[in-house]
Amino acid sequence: MSNLQNDLFLRAALGQTTERPPVWLMRQAGRILPQYRALRANFPDFKAFVKTPEAAAEATIQPVDELGVDAAIIFSDILVVPEAMGLDYEMIEAKGPRFPKVIEQAADVAALDAGAAAATRLDYVYAALRLTKSQLAGRVPLIGFAGAPWTIFAYMVEGGGSKTFSKARRMLYTDPELSHALLQKITDTTIAYLRGQVAAGADLLQIFDSWAGELPPAHYATFAVPYLRQICEAIPEVPKTVFAKGAWFALPELAELPCQVIGLDWNITPQYARQVVGTGKTLQGNFDPCALYAAPAQVRAEVQAMLEAFGPQRHIVNLGHGVYPDTPLDGVRAFVDAVRAYAFES
Ligand code: CP3
Image (tube, rainbow, N blue to C red):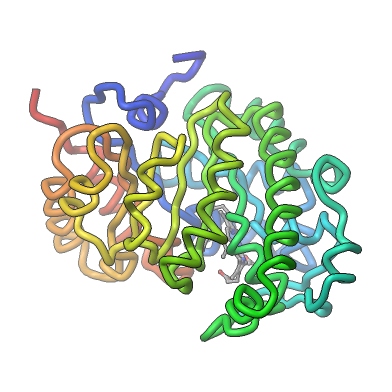
């Protein structure tokens, strides 16, 4: 496929036969790597880092060099989208994101920019993608990404992470119309943004719905799935992965989306997911990130068990969520190496 030296990841995404499953890790570009921490130390804060294409490109390629993963994911964050829409955030060291101003009423939604007008403010991400693409020189595919509308909505209404997401979930009951208006603005911006990423060289797009599991199934069907569908339908040019963390209950609907890959967390068995999704899509996941703290021999055994549970073909190996920053590199290496040593029976 195209000019890639290693196209395992894209072949698996498209359902083509592979010699072994491809492997990468969510949040592979980041604090698990000493090289990342050294590079990051040159910047006053996370946002300055993200907005410097040379640094973002370097962080993106570090795990390819250091771990031998089969795909790179552009170094950025899902929160650049609300920022481009006019809702500024701060990244507080060791705590996480915080939005000084949040969305509470109709006037707040009306004041937001959306679509192409907002997405042009993300030129620095497109620049990082172009630079990364050229520096990768076809070694592995490059993944672009965005947050799913519901997850971005949750940050914009809550103003940060939350134990209950009760402000964001409350709005779905008390003002469904306003909720839909905000979700649509986020969706329009996300579509323009993801199109820009494809134009800049992204080979596949992943949509992170990190807070999917917070919603009751009826709300997930009403306030999340239709917007995921709009995004998937708007960008037919590249394969797409939908990762809806905690949304095992929505798997039948996710299986109907026009995407090629479904990401799974560790709360679901591969056998159950395959039974619900059928053979028409590739499954990605779903190693418990905490298993990486075990001794390398145990990591290898757990990987073997996971690979057998998924069965041959249409599987992209990943964790069930992002790698935790204090994970020992030995565990991460054992994970990647165990997959790379595996061969499907022919
Ligand atoms: O390697 C990669 O996967 C690419 C980079 C990437 C980052 N964030 C870098 C980052 C990706 C794909 C994301 C996505 C992201 N960001 C998600 C979706 C995935 C998920 O984990 O559910 C979410 C929910 C966010 C929001 C976010 N960004 C939080 C909650 C935090 C703070 C927690 C933390 O991990 O520190 C961030 C900050 C962030 N994003 C860091 C990195 C490397 C750490 C900041 C730093 O290094 O200074």
